[in-house]
Amino acid sequence: MENKYKKIIIDALSENETIFRNDRTGVGCWSLFNQSLEWQMEKKFPIMTSKKIYQNIFDTEFEWFINGETNIKRFKDNKIKIWDEWANNKGELGPVYGYQLLNFNNQNCNQLQNVIDSIKNNPDSRRHIISLWNPNQLKDMALPPCYLYFQFFVNYDKLNMFVVQRSADLFLGLPYDICLFSKLLLYISEKTSLKASKIALNIVDAHVYRNHYDQALQYCNNESFDFPDYEYKNNKLTLINYKSCEAIKAPIAI
Image 1 (tube, one colour):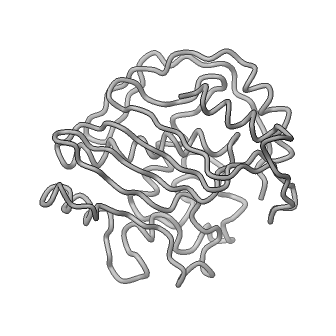
Image 2 (spheres, helix red, strand yellow):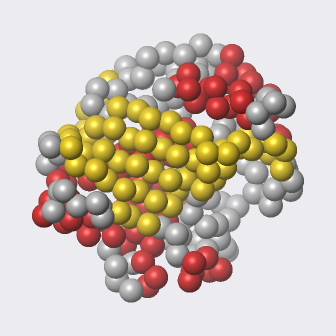
């Protein structure tokens, strides 16, 4: 799967495949339409290896997400700065990801628990869905959700998940998003006594920012390693023998 991810980056940087956008950040980016990735969760954990990915970052973001938090205190406590530029002076982001997950539209709609109950009680349903896109509250959000739709498919004793991402920062953001999606499937699989199986991800606008160009090329030229084995129990993920190249730093486009 990492090779497919690298190919998407290379395509984004190719004049024949991409378009250049003067995006909302003012940085500019090369964008591709409708890119997809698939991976299996049954043996390996999909953490990229051609640069170092930090587990404490996606673990923290996952806990922040499933607990419905809208303040960046959890990140601050773990010395993670990924949301600093969007938060107000009190650390608030508005009704973003986790808020819509546990209290959609401020109406006490807990989509996480609802989908767990739905999978348990009616596994053949085609309505095992979580939607984070809420037009009524977009104006109150520091940043509208980039990953916004999850649908689950029960295949006997296995659980699959389909994800829609409206926008993906290919170099910085997407590797961490992939880890978060994988943890979400593991979490719900454990709650429903099913085996986490396949994840299919579709990205509407997949882009590389102009100030990530050199770093993205370095990443694509680096060696790749096998994804690590893992253990998951009681919402704790343990990676086994994760091997990667060095970290590659790049500025966030705000």
